[in-house]
Structures are given as C-alpha cells and as structure tokens.
Length: 267
Image 1 (cartoon, rainbow, N blue to C red):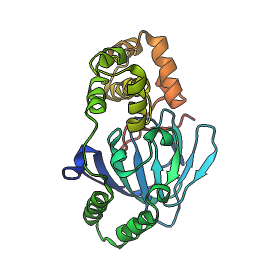
Image 2: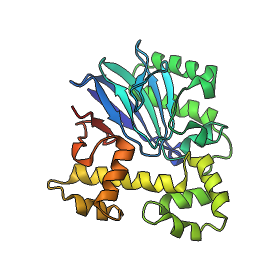
Image 3: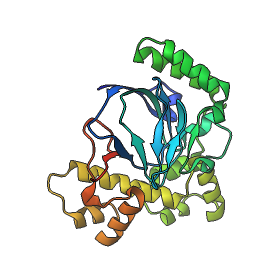
Image 4: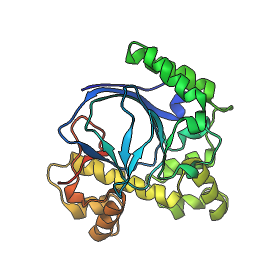
C-alpha cells in the first residue's frame, strides 16, 4: 500500500488536519469499521469503482466517486474488497464550515455526494486530480481549489474554538461557565458549526482517547482505562464504547497501517 499525507499551508491548516492519498490498499478482509471522531471527511475515488459503504444496519450506501462523510456519532462500514486509489481531505472538527453554507448538523451521521454542496465544481475537481501525475501535485490542486471555494473571512468562531479545546479536558458544564451565553444559544451555535452538541463531542473525545490508550497498552486494565478517560466506572465506559462502535472494547482491533478509527470487524 502507498500512503502519502500532507498538511496544507495557512490559512487552510486552521480548518484541515491533512490531505491524504492511498493506493494499492487491498487487505485480506473485505469490510472494516469506520469509527466516529467528530470530524468530516471528503473522499474522492480516483478509480473506476464507486465508493461503497454500509450503515450500522448493513444497508448499502452507493454514493458515486466523490462524497462527504459528515460528522458521526455512529460507526459505519467500508467495503475494502476491491483495490482502490483514493484521495481524502480530513477536516478538523467544524473545519468544513468554511466551504459550505448549510449548518453542519444537517450532515450528522450522513454520507452525501460532494456535488450536493459544490455542484459541478466537485466533478471539475476530480477531473483535475485525475490529470495530476503525482500525489504532491494533487495536494497542490486541492490547496488551490479549496482556497477558491472558501468563505471570507477565513476565521473560526472564537467561542466554539475555545469550547473545542476545553472539552478535551473539562466537562461541558465547566466549559459553559466561561462561554458567556445561554446553554440553549451555545448548543445551537455549536451544532451549526460542529454538527453535534457539546455533550456529544465530549463523549466522542473520551471514546477516541480510550481507543488510543487501548492501542498503546501492552497490558490492558479496563478499569484504569475507564477512569483515565473520565468515565464514572467500567460499566459506563463499556456502554459508551458499544454505542459508538457496535462492539465491545475487548473486540476492538486497529488495522495495521491505518488510522485507529479503522477497526477490524469481529468475526
């Protein structure tokens, strides 16, 4: 498998975690779990095959060559049966708001064709990427195109930006004390910018932290992981993990060479 990643230049790096290019990924398994992290992903399939996904209920989602994976609080399944060449944009939480007019909660737990938001520009972008000869050239195409798509001024909402940072280490109620607006008003603002409530994002972060700890631990003590990630006890941790992933923590297996959000489906 060939994998290239690239962090775009400012100001795009305020909103985008990375661009990525993957070719020749043909694992032994035909499907894998994609787990929620609160972000948005644009996926552009550069091959003849269309993107093929399944929701938690195993309903097939055939969405064409260019798609937006909205912010999720639920898992979904990726079809990996056929080798693919794919280019992606991994946005920071809420980062895609600079490139769309709609409130982000409209994309919660959804997969939508990219041309729904960018119209003919989505296909034009894919055509230009197909004409590029190397991943490095493709990344430069993405930078130029995204700058032309962006709303001005390119800046993040300061209250939401503050909350995103603080929710990683503080409870929602404590963060809200420093925001200076009503809970209802801030929930509406946060949902429009991030796609979910502050409470949901905080839970997603704890889930992500748990996966990182599982992946980095040689010896796993579940109670220690639960308490370290801010859960009241092991039972609450297991319940939350199952809600986001559909599996037990003990069944979680990250896939070598992939982000920890990609996990093997239990047999």
